[in-house]
Image (cartoon, rainbow, N blue to C red; front, side):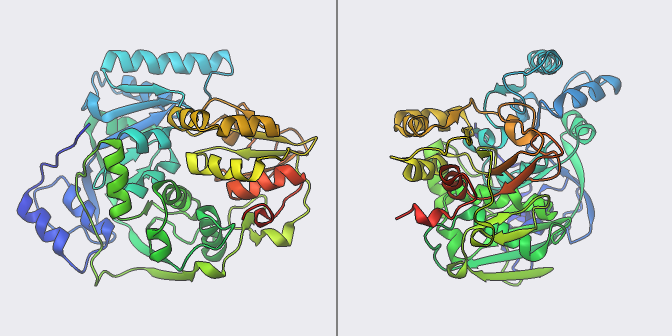
Length: 437
């Protein structure tokens, strides 16, 4: 699917060339709906045109109900509304099955896109997102999609209902934080470690209602999958959006996916930031976030030896092909520790198929892993890996709040896929560098 911007070209070109504006100020200035043709400055409250809107089975049923209560007969543009059945897929109960039925009927009546069995944010990256979009999703981790140079943010069910109806949303223009990662990633350190480090440094409220721009030499070297990890967890430090600007890596990805850019946006060299955080990644090491806070971060070596019951490799944060490939490298010729469950949930059917064809899935199965269909189930504690009372899990997902993956008496540690898999082998939290060449 290709998208064409209809904005006034002279105004657009003027904004794009302005060296004093951040990425966010530029894209929201261009997307604003009024005819003022004014720059959208920090803290301005504006109404913007939405390019895509999405919801999933955790949020869409209520949104559909609200549309009915408002008497809205048709969504504003059926080509730009996307529904995802992914949070509990396949359904785990009669109630969930009924929610799915509501979504299927709505999609059929409206003619909008609906997909089942792919984690929503990964599916959006694979099929819809292009640079220059403004995307609103009824899920906080919609920020993931900013990895393709778009402004993407999450809202609640009632707000997405209004977007479905009008194609518009009001936003306060957020300040921006620039996070600069310099250097080359050391062995055993991945994008997940970088974002955990930032969470530990600035706290879970360190970017409240701000947009984070990730940049620097280390970011330029990252794949789109790794950039998605950074943007995904920007919401865990309170950010409104996480962004990696378009570059040659983005262009190569779009070419592979058969899509074209809507708008190429870059921050001005004189843009003003609320904060600039600059880090040398060569000094970093594998990290974990301890229960029950994402910003309670320590080096793996400081908690090594903590026994685990379950290791989870999945979620919209880390379950892409490169993550499964890392798991294969570590697990080849090895076994999951007896008494430990290693649950692997590919992020999409495309990822699953690629992992099957490359032999990765066979290696994981031989090592003792359990493979599920693509779903958010284990991450949100609904099925396919729910934790019992007193159980401990090391997970490459994005949250470790009390009861996040099941029992409020369970504990979740967050880490990279490499750390998760190394820990599954040892039976306790372990440093992945012992297994990586």
